[in-house]
Length: 112
Picture 1: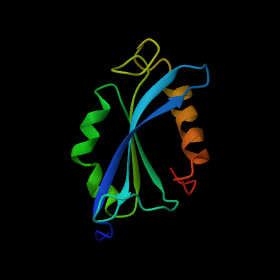
Picture 2 (picture 1 turned 90 degrees about the vertical axis):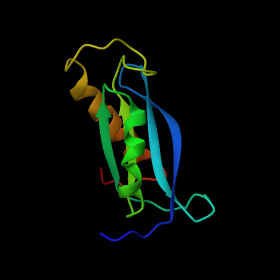
Picture 3 (picture 1 turned 180 degrees about the horizontal axis):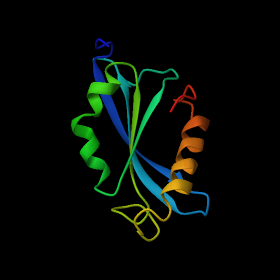
């Protein structure tokens, strides 16, 4: 897909899980040449990682410039996300909570 947006805005977001734990994520969204957000609903690419959500900033612009949102989420108990990290234990439920949260947001067209 060709590049259709000039720039990308990155913002930190808090995402509540089914049990009240808050996870942290970076949302990358399209911006114009002046760095102003471009309104509209778009599909969202979700990346959940225990390795730090800042890593997504290196490649996120490639997707966002082509018409997607990118949500790069720290998994439970990692970096600034709340809770305790137990590999795999909460991934299914937390992934579901995150997808449901995305679908409720004004930036989302419901596709994740």
